[in-house]
Image 1: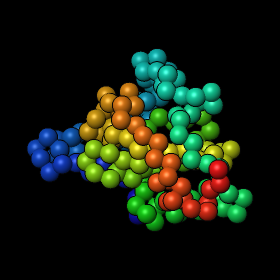
Image 2: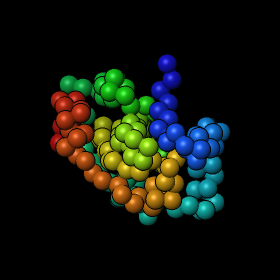
Image 3: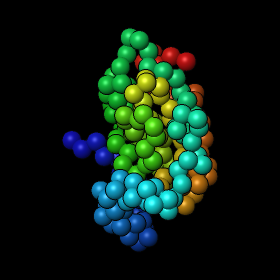
Image 4: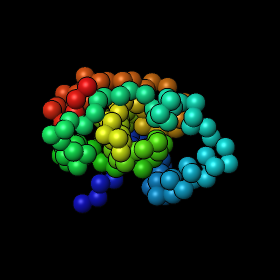
Length: 153
């Protein structure tokens, strides 16, 4: 079973063209992203906090839980690997759940047991708005309910 979670493209000609383009680009994204960052073609720092991470902290992994348990719970609920994403400082897991053709939930787990997440536009349909973080929302209550007792404040 693949943990890759592709976007949900509309069943239109445009949607199918985008699906084809992204299916070719997605495996290359980490390399293109890192190359563009190293040449300063793009600037991720404008969106990060003092820890080198995007905002929207959900909590910390509970002492009775683990990153593995959280990943298992998220996968059981339809989440999959998020290859088309920034890589924040200390990040060990990045998962997403596309909810429609335009939006997704995105969860990150960090080596220091911090968990962050947000609701946003999918990059496949809205690359510029996604990059600029237009329409990004916290949705902490959704994530707290989803993760339950696996996290603490």
